[in-house]
Length: 178
Image 1 (spheres, rainbow, N blue to C red):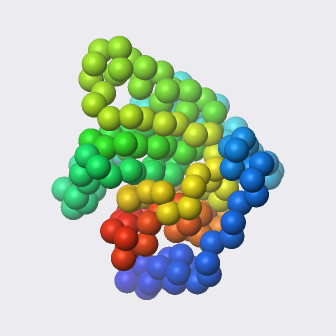
Image 2 (image 1 turned 90 degrees about the horizontal axis):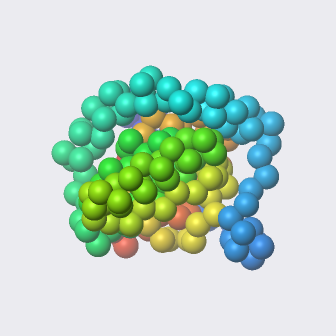
């Protein structure tokens, strides 16, 4: 485990992130390669039963993360590979990103229900995007998490570079959970 952590850390720290083009930032659109499209299609196909399959496991992991990760109401948190938003339940401003449109639609629907019932204290934003091409500003998140998702990154190194690009540095108080 120590070796794997060191290897991931080295990949994230290897190079400075590349800058996005202006059009890409403004539209938030991305081009899906075949592999990313296949992954998104798979998760779109199981969207209806997604939480039945994964919710219990993800909630257990979320409990462990919350015990160890100090998140404040002032923090901005990004959940990469957020699915339906099960792992995005933090008391702060949360943005969730996932390439599967139907999972994001379910997350948006749950958010609307929470807002309607006045259960939501902090803003939620949902973005359809793969980890490798996040349409988000550099250094804009205090916390970046990716729970049970990195195995689905089509390009692990690029996904980690993007996570590093949008997250704040440790000197700025940035925290990461993968």
